[in-house]
Image 1 (cartoon, rainbow, N blue to C red):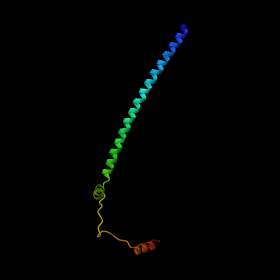
Image 2 (cartoon, rainbow, N blue to C red):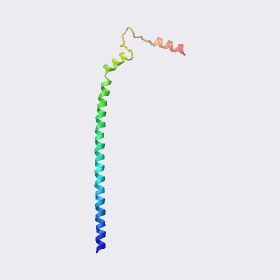
Image 3 (cartoon, helix red, strand yellow):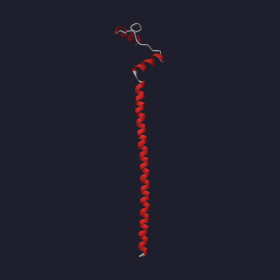
Image 4 (tube, helix red, strand yellow):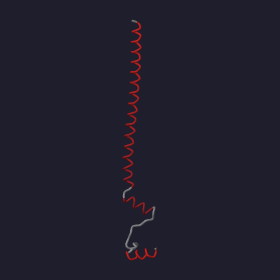
Length: 97
């Protein structure tokens, strides 16, 4: 009878240890999941913020201002526009060949 009690006691202790280990692992995984979820939310918020900044940087007015200031570009006018006719283009092509 004592041998049976000893086997049952060992089974109960092993079962209790397994249960404690499983609960600990479950809690650890839950914390990791929460951290990953929080990181995902932060990355999504950063992405949205960057998309807004990107749209703000690409406004036509800003692009035109940068082209004028940094690249020394100016808007086209009939006075500075040079037109190429088809006849002139054909003559240029024959001379180059």
